[in-house]
Length: 165
Image (cartoon, rainbow, N blue to C red; front, side):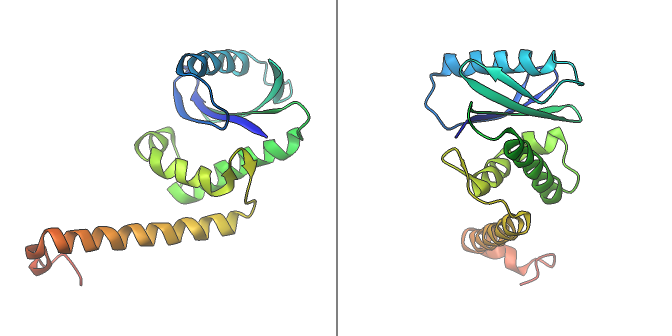
């Protein structure tokens, strides 16, 4: 089972944190700090798996971001390393060459993508195509809802030339 997922930059700023076990805020900050110190100071020639308390942290560095997952000690490390890679591929496809600012300004979409393939700390969906199709459907629903809101709350906008109804 996945305990938590962290996305942190090299300076230690947490860009995404998703916890699947209940922790107090002070404990969350302590965990984020400890995990960052653990993965940043680790030599790149070592494996991407490290023991953390009574669990394992699986991490991978992409550009300036560290993607870290804390899992049970008996779980398969390679499966979760592949899960991190899948998450990065989906982010890259969804945001067209993702960068740290995409994660900061579109954090709600990043959480939505994460929730599409990890549910309650367990891997739910492993098909990149299925996740991207689902995200496309959600984007269409969002844009239709926004268009509907514009029409309802500002009826005079439909007369403007730049809207194609």
